Structures are given as C-alpha cells and as structure tokens.
Amino acid sequence: MKLRELLNIAGIKAPASLLNPEITGIEYDSRQVRTGDLFIAIRGFKTDGHTFIDPAIRQGAAAVVCEVKPHNQNIPVITVHNSRKALARLSQAFYDTAILPFHLTGITGTNGKTTLTLLLRELEKQAGLKTAISGTLGFLSDFEHGPFSERTTPESRDLHEMFHTCSRAGIQSLIMEVSSIALELSRVENITFDTAVFTNLTQDHLDFHGSMDRYFAAKIRLFSQLTPEGTAIINIDDPYGFQLFTSLNHKKRSCSLQNSHADYHFSEYHLSTGGLKGVVHTPDHTLSVEAPLIGVFNAMNILQAVAAWMEHHSHIRPDHLSLKSLPPIPGRMDIVRTAQHGTVIIDFAHTPDAIDKILKSVQGIPHERLIVLFGCGGDRDKAKRPVMGKIAEKYADQIIL
Image 1: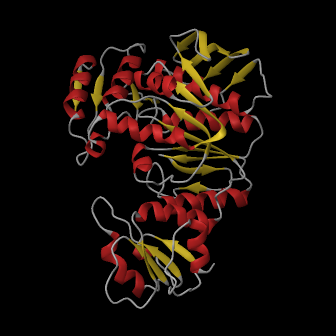
Image 2: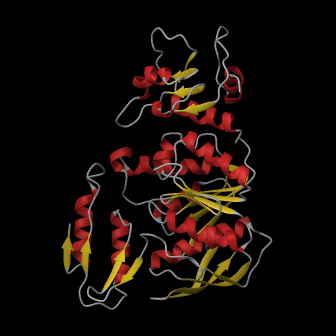
Image 3: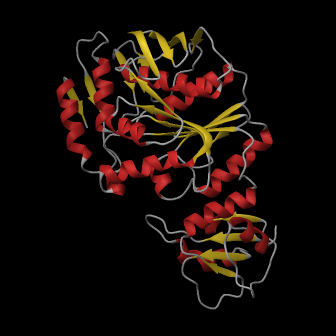
C-alpha cells in the first residue's frame, strides 16, 4: 500500500510535497523494523520511541510518523499531535480491520476478566462458533496459541494484526480483555465492540491513573465504543457498575447476585468443592447452570458469561447450560492436592478486593491451618500493599511475604 493511500484511509493529513513510497508493514519497535516499514514513534513509560527514529531508518524504515520532527531526514516524516492514536488508526487501515467479520466482546474490570473470557469461550464453542480469546493468558484459539503481546491488551498494531489473523482463520467470535491502561493509551482507538462487559472496580493501577475516579473514567470508555446494536453487560452489585448502569444511554443488561429485579440474576445457587449449580433468570427465560468453579465471586463471573452469551444468541433459549467441560483455569482458584502439604490453591489475586474474596472463599473449605504466601509488584501501586497485608492477617494463621 502506498503511503498517501494509507494516510488517507487513516484520516491523517499529508503535506502536498510528501514522497509516496510503498509501505510493506507497520512497526512501533525499532528492533522489529524491516525494509519498507512505516515506523511510528510512541512515548512509553520508560523509553521514548522518538529516540529510536535513526535506528529505525537504518533498519530500512520507508517513512516515519512522530510527534516531534527529527532533523535532516531523507525519508518522508509525518508529524501528528498524538502518535499513539495515529498508530491505532494506521494499523487499522493497513490490516483492513475497520469492519470485522466476527462478534467482538470486550471485557473490562479490575477482577474476573480472564475467568469470564474462558467461560464465555466455552459457551460460544458449545454454540458451534469458532472462537478465540485474548488477554492475560495470551492468545488462545483452535488454530493458534501464543502471545501476540505480553500485555493484557496488546498494543494497537499487534491488536489489528490479531484481528487480521482471526479474520483469515474464519473466527466467528473473539473475546478480549480490555485493560484500563489500554483504554487510556488508545490501544483500542476506533474499534467498535458488539458486547462490552463491566465486572467490577476496586483498587488497582492507581500508580498509573492517580485516583479511583480517573481509573473509572478510563474503564467506561469501552462503553462509548459499542456498536449501535451492541449490548452492555454490567455487574450492578458493584457500586461503580451501578453508577455506570444508571448513566449509560445504550442497550444494557444488569447482573446481580443480590437484586431479583436485575435482568440476569440467580434465584438460587449452591456452591461446593465440586463447583456451582444454580438457576438463572433472564429477561424472558429461566435456565439451570452448572460449572466447576468455586467461590461466590465466580457466581458473578458465571452469571455475566451467561448474560453476554444469551444476548449474543437471542434466538437460543436452552433449559440447561453445563460448563463442566471447562478446563482448569491457570492461576484462578487452581487446586492442587498434595500428600505431604495438604491442599494448595494457586490464584492470581493481586488486588485487595481479589485477595479478600479468595481468602473468604477458602473459609468454606475444611482446613486446620491457612498459610498465605503472597507479594506485591515492586514497581507498581504501593498504596495497596498495606491493605493486602491487613486482609491476609485477618484470615491467615501464617503469612509468607
């Protein structure tokens, strides 16, 4: 694709005198640049892509998009106000992913995103849909496994490459975790979602966002990117979810474990070490559900998965949904029974709310002593550390930090 055509599709103005080379790829990492690529310089947390413009050109970049024009370059340079937004739009134009041939679900919230993506994937597969997921566990599908990115939500260029790959593979449903940082940094800029799910909002990432209000503002951007026919699935038991539900002017469905007037709610559910069984009420239907997950917090994950699936498949009204074939979710209430050390539970819990819920759920499992081994990211939010320590102290007989 010629540079001018690419810029035009992306809605980026080009100087009349700009040369028009053939563009064979898009990169934001100078180490990955190949001859003919368009290099887009973005500012990161620790490094600034503008300092790597010269190496990118030496690698063979055919043109550069940046916010600050470098000196004495003999290739086309386009300056923009926000190179992250430019990266998103140019990637969408290059990979031809403005219109996606599959159902796109975005899941956001502090906790529960990964479990929910896997639950929904299992339901989509039962409906006969070729399905893929993207998130903390990487990219998983029937045709390919592996990370398109090490991030929960890939950088926009990698995201659109993933969309392109899914389109060519005939994927019918893609379920992705959408982080607040990705929303803030325009990684999902100009992408429209068919379904958007809000799980909850509790303390996390305040080192990046600065306050809970700004954290919430980043999360709810996802819901402004719903298609006109799209649906929002919202946990109204969460105070921020209730606020979102009451203010959102779009098709929406409420989920609750406490409110029998919610669009989706359990009339009853039973938890055991073998999992959950319950009866779900929908706006026009009642069905039984079973899943091999323990913990009250997983009841909401199951409920929201059922809601998102039912709204996607409005023509299907099953009497029963079984998720018993769901494989163990790595690091999510992952139970290992040992001969010498009793029952070991491995969980990804890394926020105050998550560690409180996991330890509260463990109280329902018979035990003599509870040993809690946990830590906090050394380069991230420091404010949550003492809170997590107090929660562990509340439940544990012994703490290992």
